[in-house]
Length: 204
Image (cartoon, rainbow, N blue to C red; front, side):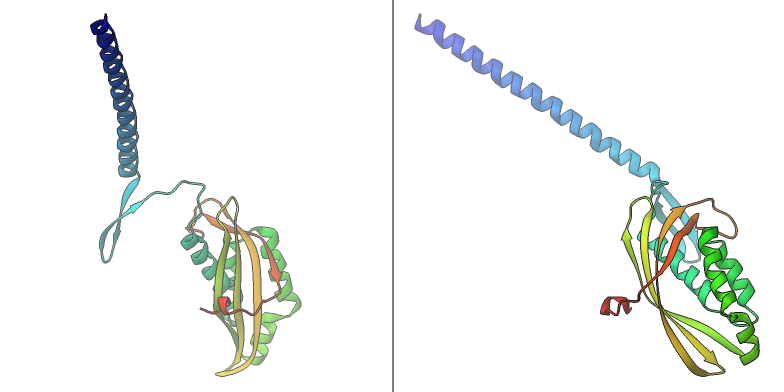
């Protein structure tokens, strides 16, 4: 009778060990499958970019993603186009900037320039404006991405600095169609002027 109990106990132990081993094997199989799938997906997302310095590997991002690098680069190009010019480059720079911003926001800025007779003053005084970007902050990487930019617009006559205006902007960055005039496929939207907050974070 005692041997029968021992056999039953041993059988139950072996059954439990077998069940645990089976569960462990299934769990390991699932884990290995997802790891393999991730490796395959990563490999499929890898692309190669040919540059003057050689061929570099890169990875695709989701179409809805806006990376901080893209957002900052777009912002800097927009700011230099929209706010830095002279009499000869005024029209071209504004045209370049208007391809990077939504129509209502772009018209709002241009109307302010027209009211201030910016181009007329360039011609009258032989002046120009340059910008020094202090910082571009990506406040959110959501949809849409949100950003703030801080920069100084400097007004020169000849080589003499006459005035320096601190400007701060807040805006969204949204996806749009790629084109020759907008190769980023990104657009500044809902732009607004905000108070320039003096901070060490605004200085690069």
